[in-house]
Image 1 (cartoon, one colour):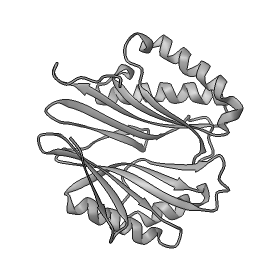
Image 2 (image 1 turned 90 degrees about the vertical axis):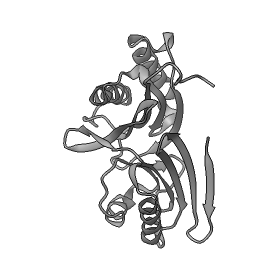
Image 3 (image 1 turned 135 degrees about the horizontal axis):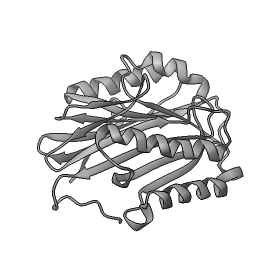
Image 4 (image 1 turned 45 degrees about the vertical axis):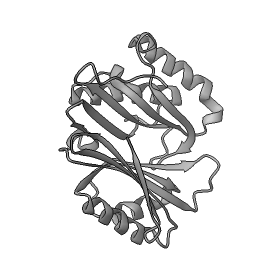
Length: 238
């Protein structure tokens, strides 16, 4: 069951999704410009606090040069921020942001070295894991090498939540200059999926978009993984 509400005063779109028991996920989306970004972030934080929730994840859509301003404008940022500058964009604009916040459950951090890469939490039905801003450690590698490294990192970080890659229900894949190497990327993903037996189980739903990120890497990724606690909770292809 889901419930969507729109607040005209703040200009935010808030989708409220009950999970189980008292646990609720909120998807909060805001359009903004560079001028009104600080005010928009204040409004997002106020809405999160009003719901006794915690931000677990954030997308930001705009030029990579704005990254320092974003970090300073979002108070006490303690979650992965995935910045996306579309391949067709000149990088001189800010268009908006979306955060995922959770109430009713403790968020357990997942660390990529000293950097927080996401969190896991649980309901009476399942364990959930959200990871974002995942990139290769060596950005001098080729696109194919970076892509495989990101998939390996996804798998490694999921281990902190006692999950496997086969628990992944959704991936977000952003490739710099996508049209120049998308075929090569698919070869890498197919290889990784074959090695992990993904095609024989459940293939994650996925988004693949041409977009650069804050550090200019060839690939940045994010994921949602779900590990059911009982047979009544199922993850199915739609």
